[in-house]
Amino acid sequence: MGASIMANEQPTVADIFRRAQSLKRERPQSSYKEIKQLLLDEYKGAQFPPANRLAIPEQDARAPEEDWSAGLPLMLRGIQQQNWEEVINGIMLSLEQTENYERETGAPGYRDDWHDRTVGIDEPLKKGVGKWMPEDLMRLAERQTKK
Image (cartoon, rainbow, N blue to C red; front, side, top):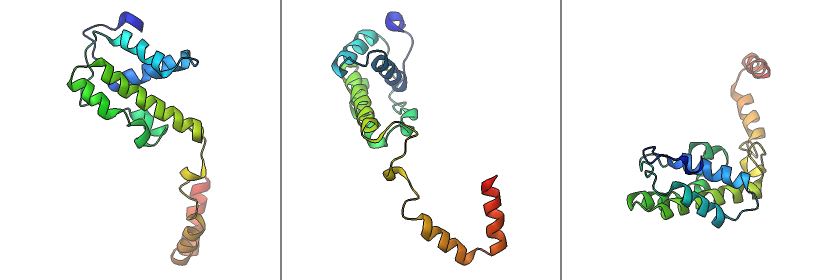
């Protein structure tokens, strides 16, 4: 990508976030401050992202919304004020929060107890279903889930 961002191409917040992620992957030893500077150099002069597309959809799978969305207010203010530094500050805050969350809980696919929605409800659920679901219907449901 680099300096090839055309002044007429409008990046979305998600595009810039993905760029920040790939820069961080390419340069794992770089600080967030260094990544921020690379992004600022890269996007200076580009069109600002649309304010109505602030979401970073794929982040929902990586971290709770309160982590990845931490920088959204900064991004919005940056877009409204046409200030790349604010936009990139918001991107970096969201990236840092997401990476901190993953460092503490493990990468996507790894499930900790906190994320296991069945903890504490599995047994009571089976008992409850057993009370009101007829035996033959229960066997049918079990066969369906095993397929």
